Length: 365
Image 1: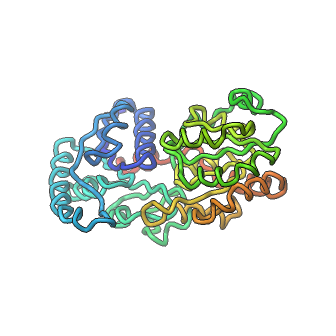
Image 2: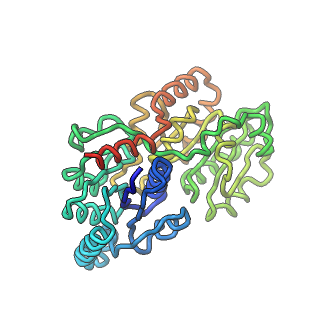
Image 3: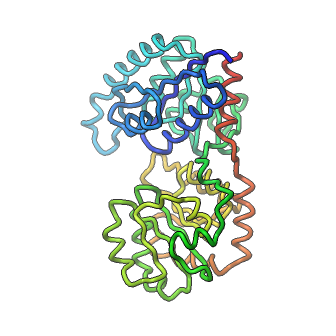
């Protein structure tokens, strides 16, 4: 197979970086001769994470609009112009066959520059509610890969391909059974288990919800794996002290084991978390973060709630209601079965491979 040259742009958070790296890995697997260059935003997470994954990256001096400070936005037009010129220079030097945008600050200028240079572009939208950048880029994109149905309300229908999101291969470990996972966490095999995850950084609201209900947890007869996040761990460890059925863990290294243990999962509603949960097929209560662009986690959660594939509790109500709702769900086998069946129907296991199929079609055209 002949050499392909691909630019992948975007980042700002793990929710953009992980799909970008997964797409790159799938491209390399399909064609080892593929040359891949990442373009990110200077000072953002991708400038560290992408090299760790083994890929080259160039940075643009671009930043997002700061709602909290008008003063910080004064330089934004100048940064945008500088980024467009830099992006155009990168495109002309690298000479890609295709440019892929995964969302985030850098994808805007890079895909604009690529289109201007006559390079075909592909968008990968992880969420059920598209961000402003991808909406603007959609007009010039050849293909838009989405993870949710119904995206024709924001994108041109003829460009949309439902591919799903890339998911971590280690999540879908068929060799892990519940007994093995229970032993790994030092839990009781005869008790039902709730797994609470606020992501790798933790989620303050979820942690406060556990603290508010610690007495109820203690007397519940259930057990809880509580991923607290690094910055909250010391405080959460104090909360869990003396509560034998509440296991506070700073970071869960073996998510496949945590999922295997769980009878009910409590999670934020990030796009990639939901894509994984759809494949795991366990009953889920989603608590959308209100601190995200355009409230996209609420839209992600509602896409499942409307299919009776998950329950949702709003962030503002979680401290009062979350743990009670989880314990109630734990004791309602009928609802658990319904949620489990419906969420699993929505899962797409080969998202990265489907996206690569579309990228290669665009290159062939």
